[in-house]
Image 1: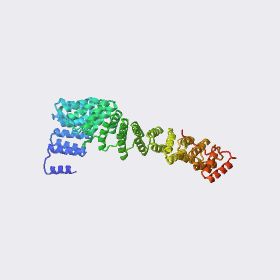
Image 2: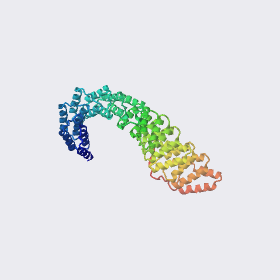
Image 3: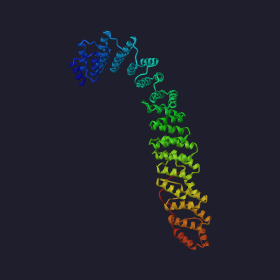
Length: 525
């Protein structure tokens, strides 16, 4: 290799290497992981009568530790002192690091104590080397004392990750006050605290149910915009921010939780657990508009929502007396792939119905049936009746048809009877036509009621048309006013219709009325 060639050329030209030359050569060989070559240079150095100095020993000790040759390194350290070469802070730090790297933390502590007894003060590298080793060996009391010494001497470590390690170890050991002291030490040493440091503490306080202290830490985090610092190398983990957000949302502090989470969002965080906690929190606090805003963000960014979140949102709108918005939320719930239960459907339907939004209630009912939900349908008859009463006949018939396709039959007798009593003759006629066309069985008294209503209103031709259909579908009828209808037809000049009706009645009189029809579906009560 080039180094050896240069060394040999140097010798050929009669240039004698110095201690400095050998120190560089030994250091280079260890750096290149050439242990034997490094040792040969050391032996060569001694053979030339060049005495090693502290740099030589420090380099050799470091090299031996790199190759896990602990005994050899210790022997050199002893030899160094025997030759009255006083170990310096680098010597002790090298020994510390070597022992820590091989897991001999107790020996590292002994070396550290020896160093202090010799009046040699540890530097930043020393502290940075020893602290992680103490943490790994669960010597947290010693680590805390070492940290105190660092603060007292105002020595900041070269690697700030040691604070995270110490804080994490203290938290895992349940020493939460000691963990907070680590954060305070960082502040006193003017070391920037990061979101990850606060996260470790917040997570631990939440696990310990000490939420008030966790919240105080969060307040500092929000106030100082620590989450948004671009230089952060330790970000806050979901295991830290999710319990905090959940606690705030469960205790009427969703606005604060959202303020915090929006800072996280600016860092690219789109955690579904956090989003759903905010969603539910706003709803429970009676702020459905804020909850819907969160739901909209979730939808836009592809964050999955929970069915329970939508249920709470709908309940929130209903409590505020805003059924139309509750219906919109229900639509969002369905679009999100969630299936509302029958009681939730009913709550929305009832609220819309009471608010006079019959057609909107009807649309929710339609969705309910299409989704196969057949429980809590006690409002269906009222909706059908209201649609018919308001003249939305086609819509009502469409809903009835859908109900029957799904095995549910409304009470036709009641509906037609009510329409007749309220003199909604057109609706009654359309509904009766629907019944006759589908061969649905209703009580014969209902036929009579429709005919009586039409006749009383002077709608003889309509009564004639209905009676003809009844005779065709059901055979003979004992309607008491049939003769009066024939008489009225003749008086109005509709003699042809009167004649046709008379013949049909005579033909059917010998045939008993048909009582059977299509098999009934289960009736909607």
